Image (spheres, rainbow, N blue to C red):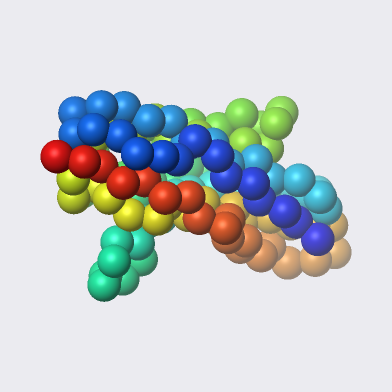
Length: 121
């Protein structure tokens, strides 16, 4: 199995910064794309940022220029540096990691448990 452990969430004031981490452990023969998604109350889950195994990045329009995604392949960890936070960034943030557990198995996406990020005005 694959376990994802998220950390770094918490209350922050508008204009502040926060860094989220998500570490993958367990049967991780190879880790492919990694990413962050978020879900605000009453809204659908949306893309925040993704990073490929070759470090190509993609950002949602609402966070482009303020958030930065990065990864540490040695630690199977993905990070999300969030700057200039706004109240509308308030959401539960979920990491998603695409993993191949063994050479004979297909890649599968796994979700973290989610971490709350409330941004006060």
